[in-house]
Image (cartoon, rainbow, N blue to C red):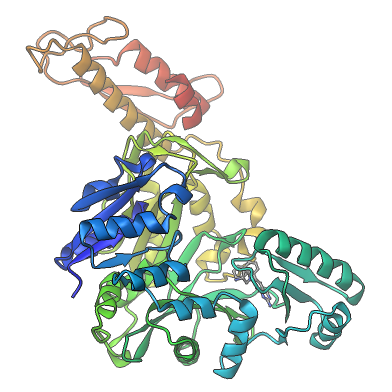
Length: 555
Ligand code: MV4
């Protein structure tokens, strides 16, 4: 039994882990950097320990500081979340040495997946299907070219030390081979300090289908079905869903069993994900195994009704798996989208600044929002700019998709650029709606999906109005005499009365989308008072530009 859990992470995943720990009666310890002193995960935990300055290497990635925090608070286990130290075998060993449970696989399983070539040899042995290719140690350029000619073009050169798409190069013909090999090796050496290359036949228009597996310490394992994460942009996942559209029961079972062979082959324990490429003919090939809980695990939770963090804590404590394979069933369909502070109109440049307003749609049985930020928080340059994950469930794919679009329409964010309109264009695209998803989806439909947002949408109007109303109330409070909190007072900026003498309520500002080249959008006020001149001016300017960036500049 784990009594006190330290969460060596931040943001939404730290909050999500704390939620489950609390539900199970496990005490929680948050850790934080100076940038996160007021962060939600710190507020939610029972205790919190400062690690150091904002840069991750001085805080969330500092093994000694994290272990000191665990010792100091008497935590008996550490959950690493994803990213940071989650796939660091050295950290895993350091936990073992300190007598602290690492909520994750044994260090040896992390190491086994460190080199793609070594991993492939293990998978070959375990009869897990591989893309036809070469993953040997002989790196002589002519030998490698011989293998490329045998495999057939196009081939893909991959750095054995790479991952997540780094250090890959497509080669279309023999005469390009030598120059491509040299370039790929140079890139790999720079990025990973290791230029061992492997070769694979290039799979055309594949899908990314990954299997969630779970193993306990007794050697039992189950799979919790698949997630389709084909819709990606530069190897960043954009939408994830479960189950994969169009996957037959028979293929699902074969992929699940192959994934379990992969897990058993490396002595896996805990939550893991085996990534496969699935080609148009239904053949699937092992890509890599992620030895952590993944960002997109909530779609699996939605379709299975299971809490994967609860499973992780059970297995880490030495308990058997909560369910057996025959007890697991797929219920309906779920989608996840990642809501980012980034600018789709400017090459998805990460956005920073104050998240003036963050109001997600209301959570329900079928709408889940995993987030670690609140209105007023800073989105800084130090960490991943993900604002939230929005997860929607439906009885069918169509129903889940409709709920997702509805929830995206309701989502209000102000102060930083975000990708909500981009996500709506992705999920409403005909090819996506009909389940025709491949890893080339975004490139294939770039022209339609990346179109600039010019319209003042109802969503933006609601966000603008919400902000203006809050600002107006604040103006009123600040200008009210301290002795009478209910006095309507005057607007601080203009000195003009904001409501008639005696009125206890202020006006409510509404912003409408109606706009033409000559007339600014309508700003309507219910109630008897007008907003202050400054608020009104800011609103008109914001609406005119149709863009929060401009509002922020004006305000
Ligand atoms: C491939 C491939 C086609 N053929 N391997 C990219 C990241 C890494 N996990 C594997 N990747 C790919 N490997 C062969 N033999 C195409 C990709 C690929 C991809 C894979 C999954 C999700 C998105 C992708 C986007 C571009 C390329």
